[in-house]
Length: 632
Image (cartoon, rainbow, N blue to C red; front, top):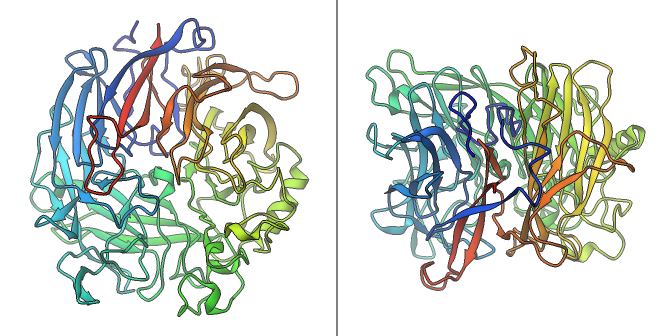
């Protein structure tokens, strides 16, 4: 049973849309009546001989009347699959992948290639992919390339463009110029190479947005103080149209001699609206100026190429999340860094810097000025996109009180008090638990477990608000009533019974639950994002057992009634793979949410050491599998 052409939908980017609501309100087949163990289940699988770290894309009726599934791999492959027949329509290899002995501290990503979710521009029918490749078959040197492809067959629309250049705000950062090298221990190394993990995004004025993490894994090279970057190309140049510059607009999130402020978003893409771009940065130099923007929300404006000139990125606004204490250099990640930096927050040694304001991707509530951000401190911050607040962390803090969303279900007063405490940077390790080197909040909430946030989802009723879903590490899925109206505070709605990372010792396991909402459009509503609450489901892939970051965790696909509230403020579970004794899904992919489109649910898992899965010498063979669920 498949969706008709008029009812079908395409999922062309990470989290479904440029607002990153992780919501599909054009799902006409799956509903609260038929998503159950009797009528819904596994339909088919598709094996890859490489690891996949990107979300699948779905293009309706793009495979001779069937849906086209596009998956990219860490071996720099772009693969098109017929959603109905499971046939491989094409497999295009873009270039030589990187052997990643210096790129993965946990040693289970054997190669790096395409690590960021691509995007399809429906206006030009172009698939944009960023590929990380060896330079001249020498693993010490690496280049990023942007490809503009035909999504139907993977063919190139224009010659690829190498990403490099100097940032434009005058702080001296260079991005990945593979010709810039230095000597260390008689070894020639590339000067700097960041990691691309956040998904690609598009602005309304022809900008292709890439946001890079600051890579500190540098066995084969790299600076001791890497940077986060935002890089934007004019898509008209990428398509080979004359009169537009192929240079990139480049923004560096810290000064050259500072460090960090990487943008990884747990794989989530930047928010874009018109010509504006919103990114959330993570650990690094975080002082009270407007240059070092670690632990921050940053608003940028893209100015496209005019008359062949290089496009520009203009810093419009920012919000600095944490007021840190100046600490002795010995307690910082970099011993020669005397700035006011985020390593002052935890008081638990250098690892205390791991606060990651950008642990999830931002979400802009459609039809409003509210920008939501989930963080490693378990808080959902609500910012005003028209006035982010800069260094004023409290008076401008938040159009709504921050929700300590993954620790506590209700109690706005308690949440507000706790958020104020956390935001003033006065955490402390719980007694007897400081030896693990990770932050533990004061008060030892919920058995000394961390509840980092790596994903948010929104079921929007109308412009006045809806329901926000969050599933933190070592926690349960929670739902909050959320209003866009002034003076109306968020309130706890319900939570699920299922617990992420059962039995994992403190501080617990990643990533909690990765989310998507589906349902029909709200009947009679002119608001394009309105969801029919009568059909709405919330889906999640979560780590049932284990830690999906440092190791391989047993995962589970699960579906809940998104809106009904059971006795005891509980969410109603409709379907899950497995039982209480195993995950039932397989080894979950670390940061890839389920994709729901046209009656099917697409989920990626890892396969480890199978006969068809190969890796470079001394690397663990890890490959992936796509599981397709639907009506039986």
